[in-house]
Length: 88
Image 1: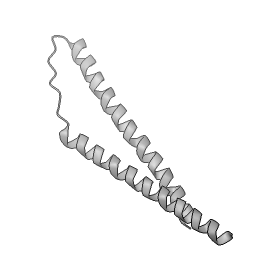
Image 2 (image 1 turned 60 degrees about the vertical axis):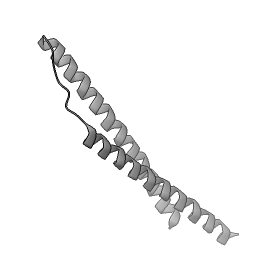
Image 3 (image 1 turned 120 degrees about the vertical axis):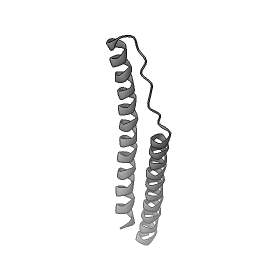
């Protein structure tokens, strides 16, 4: 009974570990894809207020993307931590 339980924990740990690695690798792929396909926006505005507003929209968009990537990597690191602890 105890031996069967340890195999089950080991299997679950391996599955969680693989899921964590897949999530981190997919996040890295998304980040590199965003980095290589990003184009600088052209700021054509007639006033300073429009230019600042446009730049703030761009910066907020970038911050949201970075925050999302950070949350995904954080969640994947938790999966990796628990997967490794179940493998031991």
